Amino acid sequence: MQNEFSKFKQALETHATVALITHKRPDGDAFGSLLALEEYLATLGKTVRSYCVDESPMLRFLPGASAIAKPTDEFWNSASVVILVDCGDISMAGVDRALLQGRTLFCVDHHISNPEYGSANIIDRASSATAEILYRYFTWDGFAITKSMATNLLCGIYTDTDAYTNLGTTPESLSASSELLRLGANFKEITASTMRNKSIASLKLWGRALERLRLDTHKGIAVTVLKHSDFSECNASPDDAEGVASLLNHLADVKMSMLLRELPGGLVKGSLRTTNELIDVSQVAKLMGGGGHAKAAGFTVQGHITETEHGWKIIK
Ligand SMILES: [Mn+2]
Image 1 (tube, helix red, strand yellow):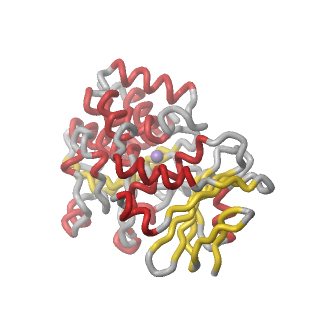
Image 2 (cartoon, rainbow, N blue to C red):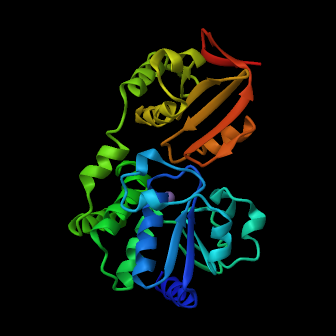
Image 3 (tube, rainbow, N blue to C red):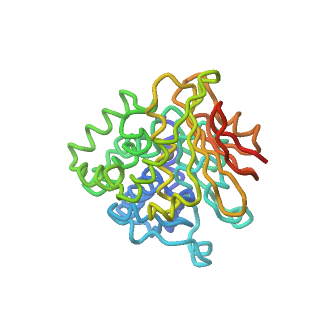
């Protein structure tokens, strides 16, 4: 990594004005990494601004998050380099690819599939989070990580490791977290805003999904369903369904889990999850015309959901 770190630092030296962008539908690692890098670059004396095509009410507590803007023409014209943060490929930024073409792009990322699209990259596919890579980079650089940077970086590691429960949790991610706590990261605020943040409507919706959970013992798949009417009856928003798929990951002894959700227009959305090291749910999603990651994937098909004696089924 040291070699990549020094090349990255060197490449930065020629740029006085820097734009940072992270991926659409941002998570804790996206915003946390973006904001920590912004503070670092600003301290080096650079003019720097952070961008994302989507907002995240949940992450508004992060120091500096309220200044993250949607990319505009000013964004495209102001900076001599664009650094993509936590983006496994250019399309994850959610902006027109043509707008990025011909620009100087750098990349800081940890996605396995990253093709190293930047002219300077710091990529570590074994890292739990982009924030963990940045923590190591700042440490390597001898930079004094501030309290606000520590909160931003810890939020990235905490959320990408699913609160230190998934396989991304390593000795490195734990020791980085320990040091960030020592540096004054606001752990209480991170857990309150990202994990202990559910509404009654959201938990009622979870209740519907848990009640309808069926296990296909033959295939080892746990399946549940959310109907269109559940959302209005529980006063829940579509966002409230997001947690249900992850909640199913708490099941022991299943190969994978699937949430089927009725969407308007006669569509059914399937969300697949697994914690089994040997299973790649993106392959299952692909069979249904969808895609995603090895441990989390999805698809959308035309049809409606019905219950049979063997469990839930999508009828076309
Ligand atoms: Mn990440």
